[in-house]
Length: 458
Ligand code: CO
Image (cartoon, rainbow, N blue to C red):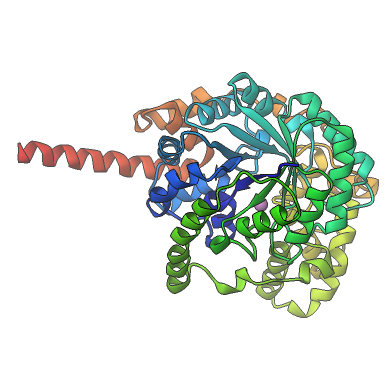
C-alpha cells in the first residue's frame, strides 16, 4: 500500500513554531528541491500566512503564492480555508467567497482544504462549489473533537455528506494534537468503510502522540499524512517527514519520496531553525512534549489562554474551578469543537461564569451570535435554559447565515479605490481592511519615490 505525504513546513509548521514569521526570501532557494522530492502536496498558504505577510513581513501574499508556483511546477500547492469565513472568523457574503476562491486557484493553488469550526457543511457549500468550478481540488476537513455526540457513526455520516458535496479527499484535522492512536484507527476505518475518496490525517506533535496516531491511521488505511521536514518538526508543529518515511518503509509501505532530496531540504532548514532559535523567535519550549492537554482534554493553546485570562484578573487561584467549568460550558453550548473561535468563546465564558459568581451573567457578543445560530448549527443541542437566558424572546437563525448577507465585493473595491491595482488587492483589503490599506499605501509611496528617482537619474 502506498502512503502519500503533505509537507507542512511552509504553512502549519512555521505557523506553529515561528508565529508564521518566515519571509519568502528565507525559503525561496529550496522550493525547486521541494518540487523534486515527490510530495503529494505542499501546504503553503492560509489565514495566518496571508495575514502575517501583510502585517509583519511587508510582502504581498498573492505575489508570494505566484512566486512559489513559479518554482514549484509539478507538486500540488495546497491552502487552508475556513469555508465561508475565508481566512478569518466572520462570515463573508457569497460573492466575496467565490471571488477569493477563484483568485486563489488562478494564482497557483491546486488543493483547497476547506473546514468549518462547527463542521456545519452549509458553511462550506459555496467555497467547495467554486473550487470545483475553477478546476481545483476541494479537500474537506473534519474539525476533530471528542464528545458524547461525536460518535463514529456521526463522523461517518459527515464523511458521506462531504463526499456527496464533491470532496476530492477528506482530512481529519486534529488541530490540538489530542487524537490518540486508537481513535485515529477507529475513525479512519469508519471513514474508509463509508467513503471512496482518499483520507488524510492532520495532527500536531504537541502531546507526543503524533507518530503513534499517524501510524495507526495508516494501518487503518489513511492515504495521505501531514508531516514536516525533521528540522522543523515536533512540538507544536507536525511530526517529522523523514522519520515517518523510514518507519513506514520498514513496515512494508510504499513511499514515493526521494531520501536524498529530503536530506537536501532538511540540511537547508537546519541553519534556518538555528537562526530563529538565536533570535528568540523560536522558543525551544514549543518544540518539546506538553501532555497537559491530555489531562484536561482541552487544547494546549486554550489552556495557556485561560491561565493568561485568570492572571490578568488576579484570579489564577481559581484555575481548577475554571477547568471544571470549561467542559460544562462546552456541553451546554452543544459540544462545539474547541478550535478558534469556539475555544476562545467557551474559555471566556467559563472564566466569566466562575469570576462573576453567577453563570451566564455576562455573555460576550460572540457567544450571543453563536447561540442565535450565526456560526451555524452546533454538533449537539444547546441547553434550552441557556438559549432563554442569552436570547430572551429573540428568534434563532436556522438558515445558512451567509445567505442573508448582501454582495460586498464591489463595495470593497470602491472603498479602497485606486490603491488597489487588482482584484487580488481588493480581496486583501476585504479580508484585512486596516493592515491591507496600510500595506497598499506604503506600496504606492514606494512606487512614487522610485518614479522620482528614475526621473532624477535620467
Ligand atoms: Co494544524
